[in-house]
Amino acid sequence: EALELADMPDRFWNTLRRRFFRHNYRAYRVVDGQWKQVADPRGPRFKPKRRHRSRAEKKEQRLRWAMQNGGAESQATPPA
Image (tube, rainbow, N blue to C red; front, side, top):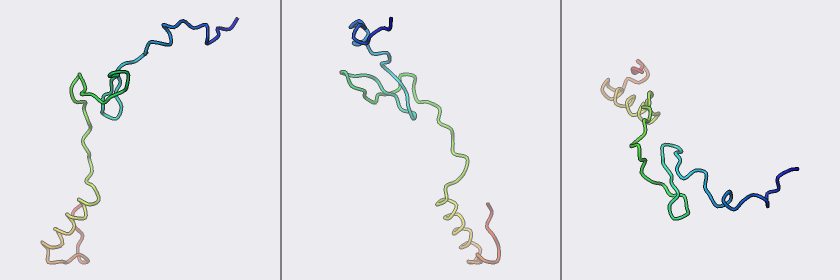
C-alpha cells in the first residue's frame, strides 16, 4: 500500500529541513520565516584570485606602452 501525501504527519510538513545555506559566496538563513542574506558565521570564504588581466586593462597597458615608445604601434608589439 502506497503512502498517501495526506497521511503524512503534521510534523513532516511544519519543519524545515535546512535553515542555512551558502550560494555564490553568500550565506542565507531563515529569519522570521523568510530567507535572508546574512553574514557568514565561518567568516569570509576563500575566493580564487583572477589569473588574467581584463581586456580593458590589457588595452590600457597597450596604449601606455605605445605612448612611451613614441606611438610606434605598427612597428613593434607590446609585451603580453
